[in-house]
Length: 357
Image 1: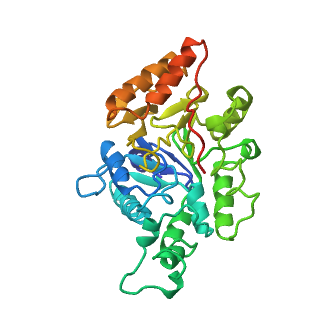
Image 2 (image 1 turned 90 degrees about the vertical axis):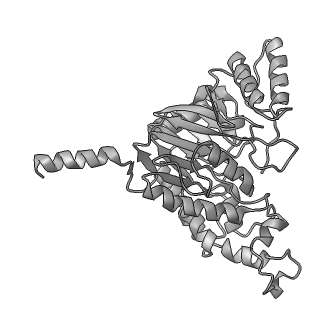
Image 3 (image 1 turned 120 degrees about the vertical axis):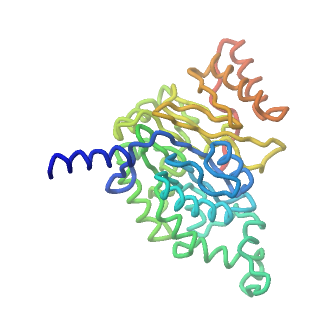
């Protein structure tokens, strides 16, 4: 190649992000927005995407070369997963046209749906798939739309195929994104191996219970990076990071009750803030943004520096976030618990909220 050709090729590389051969690692992304579990809440999905400047008033991509990562669990619990999936499909295509990306990771609820486990699907979500003019006789004994939902979310259905083409874990720059976490059993697996095994299992359902998709230490279910003892699990976190040459891991799956929250000294960032309005009277709205390698919380559209510790600076951060919320803030209980622990000379865990499947 001539010198001019080499210079031209180098310029092209500088302008466009690169994907690995397995499409599980990307570089060159100056701005990454990570959004946690959506669970069928279409209005909240629109609200968080607008807060990060990713969509316009017509719900078209407005993020330019930004990379959006949705950390899994679009489906189940809420009323409108189909509308969210249709929106994300559209944004995937539109983002590419502008040099951006939309990455939708597989969560445990996507895997459950593909396997035919609909225990958390709401009647309203089934109804999204109903055909009032052509009711299905096979819906008898099930909510309207059940049969069509089952077909469309099957491995070969429209939405099932869309889910199966996605990854369970990716790396963008120096950050790993995964739905639940990566437990001790899987620390020696590369991201490519995790993704290849997950896709293989999704192609041969029902999946075996000790596989990547269903193992409690696997990427869809593991909670140790959110709830585990830091002193014991720090070697696991470091092994995952070192194996992928990464600085941090961003996880969903484990509810933080209202605020993006670091763990393990910032090596883990938890983003399942409870966007979906399913559990109480509060409306939560926040996501993670990484710009030029630096992470921060975008809480109701306002940039907040993430806390440097799980004590006084966490209290500072939670109070700043709470002031942005409609009052009373969903964070009030966390703030009060942390204040009591600090007064007693101890620190608080990331969140005291009970786990959800």
